[in-house]
Amino acid sequence: MSEPESSAPSIPNARDAVRALRPSQIREVANAGFGVADVLPFWFGESDRVTPAFIRDAASAALQAGETFYTHNLGIAPLRSALADYVSELHGATSPDHIAVTSAGVNALMLAAQLVVGAGDRVVAVTPLWPNLVEIPKILGAHVETVSLDYGEQGWQLDVGRLLRALTPDTKMLLVNSPNNPTGWVMTREQQRAVLAHCRRHGIWIVADEVYERLYYPDPAPEADGAAPSRTAPSFLDLAARDERVICVNSFSKAWLMTGWRLGWIVAPKRLMDDLGKLVEYNTSCAPAFVQHAGIAAVREGERFTLELVRDLKASRDHLVRALSAVPGVDVKAPQGAMYLFFTMEGASRSLELCKAMVREVGLGVAPGSAFGPEGEGFLRWCYACDTARLDAGVERLKRFLAQHGRG
Image (cartoon, rainbow, N blue to C red; front, top):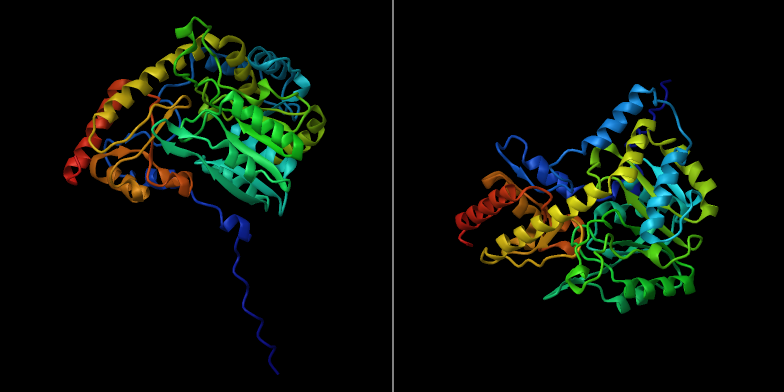
């Protein structure tokens, strides 16, 4: 008598929450550029300039000194101290006990979410938004609801009343990215004050992604009124005590051009640090020691570089706004922060298809607005962190594409 046949094996899938995550449409557009000669890529959020030499030299010296071993989960003491001094100078007294070093800003966002949300929790996010922030809580089983910015004559604006109505007592966490990727919107001090007071009343955690805080171009500039130039965008750290339900995430990627180094930090209540150390251990153990030494150089020696970078970025922003404004059918507003223009034009209602076509036909690479959620559909994101000649070449390709399709 033969043995009964076993049932067919189940299909080896990832769990449902992971399978449901959005794939990167920015990467999808970039993939469409493979094999296309002479593509001008403005799709990723990074400069075309390398990390400054004084930071690279610090990493090289640390490697030569043998800094290749594990470190404390929360980061080496000299870097935590340097970051505490840096945050204190910008936002008020902060001790190293409130600082944790992470393996990139996105790792910091994941750690922050792991600290405070779990399956079934309700999370609210201000959108359009870099997709990682919206998707990270979903990995943990949380439910994410969005409150969209509005686009009009003044660019992207927040209806703070609508946001406060969405922050119901059953909300566990609010996600805010300001200056914002992709729109460049900056949350005002008054809006932060209203949101912080509301979240205090209801015990809602605020996770603030402030990685673009130094890329800030207030309009009109404070110095026009005789005030000192503002070195940073408004931050929840300016208003909140260090031991309340506010977690601020930052990164070395933008202000010091260290995207490939994967180094970030968290400012959070001291009582979270032991548990945060456990999470770091179970995620990455620690950031590489020699990279942390590069971070010390950035924080201690990099202020002049950052100020020059911001001046260059503002000039590039203004240049690209003028150039795009002269293109028929393009609607663009100058944002107050970050390193992107989030603009609309004819044909952008299907932004992913449009971006793929521009890559294939004229070698112009920008990011589709739909990559940043349904609220971003109809827009395109252009990273202007490069020299103006490169931006001009991109605009000429845009004009050529529009002419070929009878739109220009």
